[in-house]
Image (cartoon, rainbow, N blue to C red):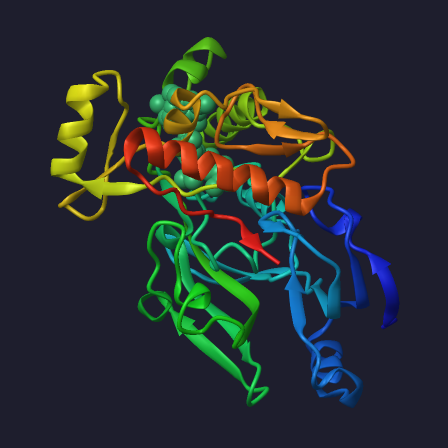
Length: 339
Ligand code: EPU
């Protein structure tokens, strides 16, 4: 294990932003992680735990230690006639986990194909796409308590998953590091193809027999057609959460903007409005200012064309928030974490 100093974080965040970490270390085992956490040199310094760096906006240099969690491995824990339980290390690349499941014909995560990031980061914000969220296949996770350095288990209810939410973003913020996640996959698939363009894409692909592989291929096709590849254009997926507003507010807005799109919320008194639609209506889709901008095919995605600054993206996000608020009276909340 090598502790490096004054390291550029550019390769470690999908926005491709330049920021320097005072210290940087990649840990491959629990023992290495505990050694770093016990090291006196870093006791009073801020810590940043990093997975794939796909949900952060670096606005300045980091004057502490960045710990990249690289715990690997996918193990079958148990199985019965209906299910198989897989435990994956926090550092496993999420899409590789999805591909592993599809190759074995274990269903449940096919709709979550190609989401950037790692297994350990996935429960933090209950990643979701195309009608499925990680909570639907979640069994339990193991996390290291940063005060006691003991491993604790969290069952489904302990995590309090919501739309892009969990306890790890709120009451337990900065108190735990996720080490592994156990998923319960299905041996018989329960297909989810109602959301968005999945059904049409599968038809266009000429699929005869529906399968989890076909759904995964369709999701990959849709994502690649709308979302910029971070290897080519820096971004971190959806920048804001889709806002949920009271039904009365939605009805009043719908009178003024009849084309307004909406989705049901899990909370019955609320309606979910796509932030991408609001941002596009406020005139930002395809906006470009020097090195940064708003993606031309998906207005919810802010982009760094190369050489952009985190603070400029932050300033752009604030302008977008202000103009959406002025037009619709809706305040957008970032999904991305500002560092
Ligand atoms: N829309 C527009 N203009 C745009 C973008 C979207 O009018 O520029 C409208 C679309 O017409 C559509 C609606 O907004 O009716 C929803 O768009 P889309 O299906 O692209 O999904 P989204 O709501 O923008 C959410 C997630 C994505 C996830 C997709 C598919 C959030 C914050 N984002 O995006 O997740 O992949 O649904 O399920 O919930 C992410 O979290 O980083 C992410 C990419």
